[in-house]
Amino acid sequence: MDKVVIVGVFDFVNFYICKALLDEGIEVRGVQIESEDTGDILVEKRLEIGRNANFTEISLGDISNDSYENETIVLSVYDLYMRYKEGYLLNEDMLINLISKNHWEQIVILVPSQLLSNVIESKAEVVIDDFIKRTRAQNKDIQLLYLPTIFGPWQPDTFMFQHSILTDMNRENAFKGLREETGDALFIDDTVKSIIEIIETKEPGRFLLQSGKNNQWDLCAVFLGLNKQGINDRIKEIKDEDLTKSIVNSTVPISVALTMQIDHAHRLNR
Image 1 (cartoon, rainbow, N blue to C red):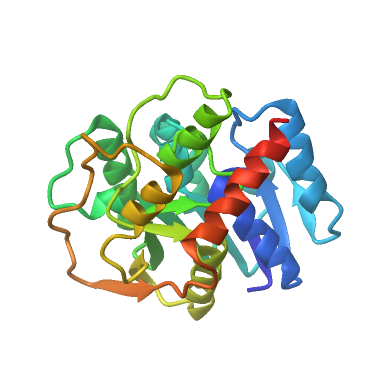
Image 2 (image 1 turned 45 degrees about the vertical axis):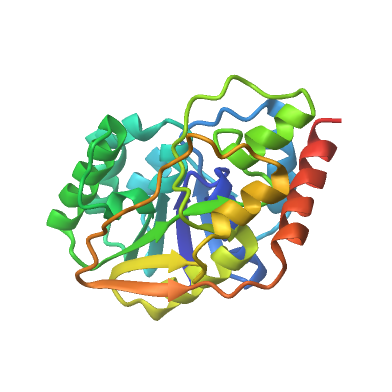
């Protein structure tokens, strides 16, 4: 990869991908569709990456009108889903045409792992499933990376872990409801390393990132003192044909990773 366009660059997972790519000296053009972050949080995120000469913040129109050669595009449907913004996927001018109009060297889409279920029930999941089908109908050489719960600093409060942390600080908003998959959990730093490794292979296909452990989400919940009663959003049966399962190497204990998230939440909300 020489050049990457990231759609939703200040969203949770995409923000880490952007930082990691910049650390590798890769040129990144980033566009934010919309953000619910407060001004101060966006300012801090921009400060983290804006000083890097390889980063340029652009608009969706800039991407459509000024396509570079040898560019990879990364779209995190996962982040849109966790922000309750999957409705953007219904805007063909905004996203479908963006993907089909340009001659991308590579298309990477991050997807909630629930979309691997044999049964797609919720309206949000139907919207995402339809978007993926329409996208693949135009270009089958796409990398679809399926993610379970991702945790770490900057995690939005639509995740149970961050909501629990903010609740303990008396800073929580009303919880919109469980959306994350509770069968597995991955630390963001480790996840991004695996994501970039997969992207760099340039091999199209469907990839499920996993911890390789049976109770990773539960262990995180126990550390945070979460009451798991009534929580059940685990994938029972998945569509695993042509699916590559990739184990994410864990570099730090759960306790260390979640303490980093807690400390970061306290720093942002002090």
